[in-house]
Amino acid sequence: MDMYEQLFGPLSRSYCDYFLYLTIFNAIIFAFVILHGLYVLLFTKKRDSLAHVAFAGFQTFVSYFITRLLYSMCSGSLK
Image 1: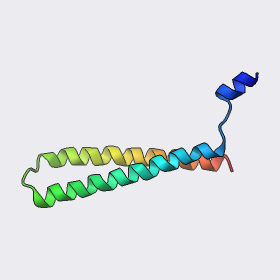
Image 2: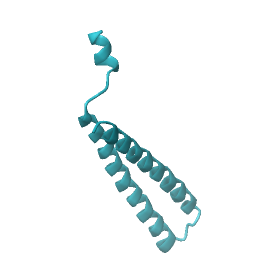
Image 3: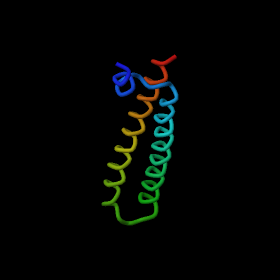
């Protein structure tokens, strides 16, 4: 039974910090994608790459939102 608890039991609250770090990382990447999109929009003549930047921005925002949601659920459930 001890091995079962080690493999499948709940982890400590300190593991919630990994979700916090991922949230911060995703927020930084999202900001870079937005800044790149603004650069493409304002300073380049290739508007076809703007669709790629918009798609990358959507993906990074969804990733940021999911990790933020998981961090909120993790920290809220272990109070």
